[in-house]
Amino acid sequence: MTKLIGNAVVGQSGGPTAAINATLAGVIRGAFENSDTVKKIYGMRNGVEGLLREDLVDLNEFFADESKLTALEHTPAAALGSCRKKLPDPDSGDEIYEKLFNIFKKYDIRYYFYIGGNDSMDAVAKLSRYSEKCDYEIRFIGVPKTIDNDLEGTDHSPGFPSAAKYIAVTVGEIIRDCAVYTTKAVTIVEIMGRDAGWLTAASSIGRVVNGIAPDLIYLPERVFDLDRFYADVAAALERHPNVVVAVSEGLRFADGKYVGEGTQSGVADAFGHKYLAGTGKALELAIRDHFGCKVRSIELNLCQRCAAHLQSAVDVEESLRVGRAAVAAAIDGVSRVMMGIQRVSDEPYATEIDYSDISKIANMIREVPDKFINAEGNNVTDECARYLLPLIEGNTEPEWKNGLPVYCII
Image (cartoon, rainbow, N blue to C red):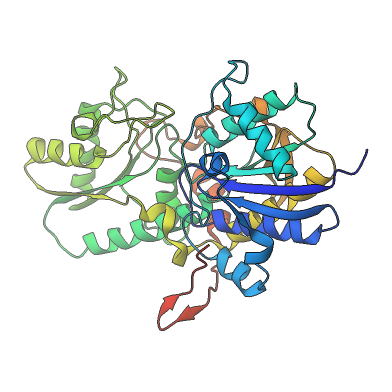
């Protein structure tokens, strides 16, 4: 194989996570460690939208100071900015591809790394398809991230463990707070997750650690039935007065309508995904009308994905490894793939980094398997909690100044 010498570009896309910048740091470190092949690495601001504007950052220059890279690992959100741009079909004749490849040639870009979730992998898959009919050699690597943990081709997605840690800790604290009163009350915690309930399942982790977990957990993998919900809550109120329920934002009724649809705007993004919220509020109103008891809903919202103060050490370490491995694979001649994490041992927990054909991953949904959901569909199993537990292990140590963490702003 002829060594491909040139420059690289890296971008971030989709919803941020508390570890997406650790993955970025891994890609940058991988490029620096292979400077004989990757002469320069550019960062595209706001993903492919920034690339189209040629809004590029010289990351060699910006990260000449190692301390900035260390700070980047513990910085929440997407340091390069993000976007949700849907690329057209590569066979459509749309001029956007010709424009992108002219930019690649202009900046001698031979390596393209895109850090993102399902929609981002869709973009990498389309660019990869278009490249098959071009005479310009460039290697495309998708680098996974998503708090939803719904990507195929990987045991779990970088970013999910930190979000899971935040949810497990926060829901445990909510449960302790609710337990101080004897008045009958129901607290509903709404957790992110459109099609896959991994995040909501993470609220169960405390059950196998300290016995603290929600009374009821509902995932989008099961049809939601309001009458069964009332029966579940009634049974829980018979056991103790302070009932806590965790629900995924993507809960649907049998007719396919979202539980929270009446409280939502109906607005959709470029990929046709409706902006979800309001499931907790809808169920709060339903419980109030049905039981007449004290009830509140709590929407964890953006904190699930930006709480870098509760990063999982496992998450950060794996995110760095995935980023580095992406560069190493590309230099070795690999292209048109998504990197992935494969679990090789539970006790002790251990993983390996590999990759899969991105055309078989893009737009697929990895749901919570049946074995992790109880027969009644109103909770997850202990096996699920034990499976998730190793992912949230360990704490990170960012630099602090005057009581606040130090962030890296590009």
